[in-house]
Amino acid sequence: MKVFITREIPEIAFKLLRKNKIPFEYYKGNRPIPRKRLLKKVRDCDALISLLTEKIDKELIDGMSKCKIIANYAVGYNNIDINYAKKKKIIVTNTPDVLTESTADLTMTLALSCARRIIEGEKLLRDGKFNGWQPKLLLGTELKNKTFGIIGAGRIGSAVAIRARSFETNIIYFDGKRNVSLERRTGAKKVSLKKILVSADFISIHLPLNDKNYHFINKDRLKLMKKNTIIINTSRGEIIDETALIQRLKNNKLFAVGLDVFENEPKINPMLLKFPNVLVIPHLGSATKEARDAMAILAVKNVINVLKRKPSLTPVF
Image (tube, rainbow, N blue to C red; front, top):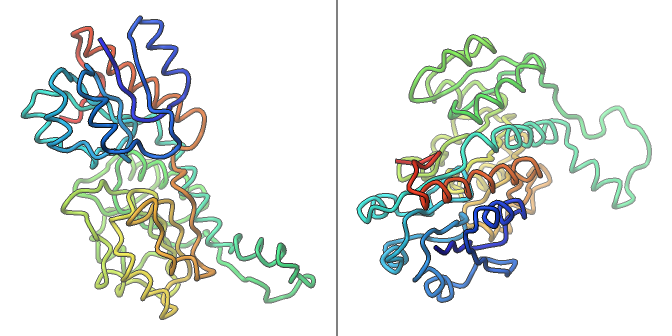
């Protein structure tokens, strides 16, 4: 048996593979593995542990004649041709649950930082322009009594809502199905998408990326938002039409935007960097030791189970 891992992941994953006497190899570069090398490396692998940066398409899947499982080191799996993998009888797994808390924490970090204009304040200090306390210096907004809108009330969206409720916000959410547990815990109300767009002071996006959700937040939907809305996106960058978002920012129609993900990641539209009220960070949603270790363990356990002819733990189909 052989496992190929497309990038170095936490050591705990390698220890688990060694403990189970499963040979493995991983790409040691700091950037995504070059396509040609990836195609070569997967030819004889029995299992592949992949990252979101790798496109696991028909060409790659056809080149993996021995592969039994693709274990994505992420909760999302839009980088994998799921239907073709299924056709080829290759199991695909992801890492749900284990990164919920870290991503929810980061979402609230962005919301609070945008609301209190933290980045603008730090820049003012670093640039040597702080001349003392002023009554109107960088006035932000409080969360208490504000309406916090959740678009996508799954695991992460729900965890964010619970955190937001602790600041005494009013929670509303849009989702394909009712989340009774969330409603009981936070008093949240399920509303239409339009209701969230026109009434929420904070809009936090927690949708999976698929054909339906590509540019879900588009020009028309941005126009429905209040001038002082704060948008937070820790899901996938392509869910927001960045060209439309930039135009909205140019027209001074948003209070702030906090982005952990980007439409053409890792490339960032340079225009986004020109707005002082746009907070950008480099895809840190699950970037805690606890979450990344748990993701590594889950991905490897999925691989071990399948190679030992046991059911996978978190199949995506």
